Image (cartoon, rainbow, N blue to C red; front, side, top):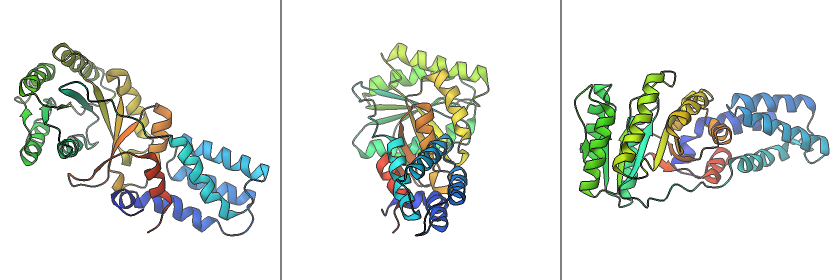
Length: 300
């Protein structure tokens, strides 16, 4: 597979596939090789998914299904595909405007990901509006404003320190009047350990629902792909505060921890809707589990 996904997962593929091919040859498998495969899977940041893979490999070896090194790679590939499951359907955009609340910690690439998402949706013919509700950090409003100008999409904003839930209500009102298709609502880059900020996030969701029935229709959590398994703890906290409906995993192009996507999907029971694969506004893709696994195992 050649493309952005293939290039974006280069480091993960080198760690997983490259390491596996160095370990495995044409000879028969033995316990020592299995131990080294187990270590490799864990260092690929597959997390709990690695334990499931190791258990499956050892069971297949014991039963005689796996006898030599050449059989391991296709076996692991098939197991990962099974763990990833099928493509998860995103919520249908039946409401107008369709409100997407975007959450995530500072440094996760949230603001840039919103710009990429706006670009993707606009390219699909959607009329998009942005709401700069991260009023705790002046730079966030400035950054989102610059993106709005570049993308030629309207933005609702206020001065630094303004009430974020009040601004969210104003944005919902403006989106209704402007008859846009999608309202993307940015929120403060909250530390998942700060209870008061998480409560504010819950308030924003409630206020949006007062103006637009059913809003927010999606709550998209941005997870930094470079944090690997640490993203799991963040996600659990955001799930409790904002009823997260889907994930966008950013920065996969700069990490060897792309395998964390497998564990994120399994442990949280949340679908990965998008992956960020570079720094330009075009570097966002809708997530396809089969294409993801292919990119981990194919070579150019």
